[in-house]
Length: 91
Image (cartoon, rainbow, N blue to C red; front, side):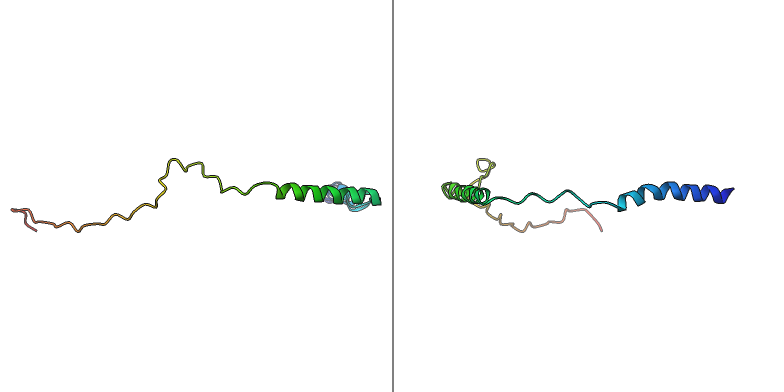
């Protein structure tokens, strides 16, 4: 009886997988373009590239520019501190 249950489970699990393996794989290929459509695409691409060349060059945006100084931070010179022994302390 246990063998029949295992066989039924395998059949139930294998059924959907078997169905997915057959048939076409993926969407149909796009239709071919006519010569007029190809020329229209080329004209649109040329106009797009021309419009990109009309944009003036700008420096990169710095939203924190007002919060920071224009100069680089200067290194702080550390002066060596002298340690003195307190009177009356024993080691």
